[in-house]
Image 1 (tube, rainbow, N blue to C red):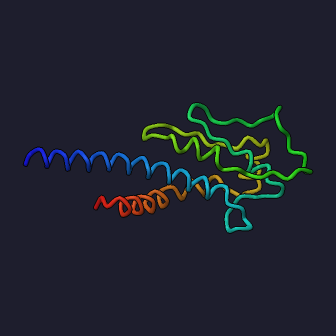
Image 2: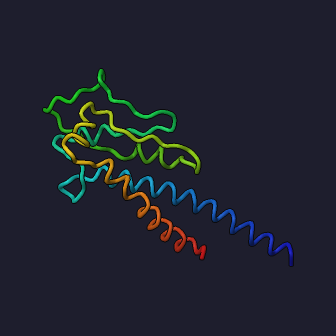
Image 3: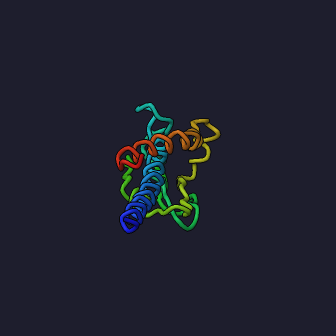
Length: 145
């Protein structure tokens, strides 16, 4: 009988660890989704050509910096945000790791603060509610309660 109890507790602990990773990753993905949601779809992201939205970068080692010498916004080209590279990094996160999320467009700060779109701040403010919602979903899905 003690062996069965140990096995049950061991499985529950392993499932709980997996659930914590799922909560971290899905919550992070959703915060990025909120940050990137265009005003035309009920979000706070200003989108004219898509350059600002497409300039989002994530890193586990350093904060992405504004790109002053690379690709420049010309106002003539349309850009399309592809979330797959962002989600690929998020999918490898583990609890305790830091993930740096930032925009490389040189005017990102101005749009967020000077023009008061606040897409970064308003998404970050939702972190506690997002985590709580994701936690409930993961616990229910995994049957941990």
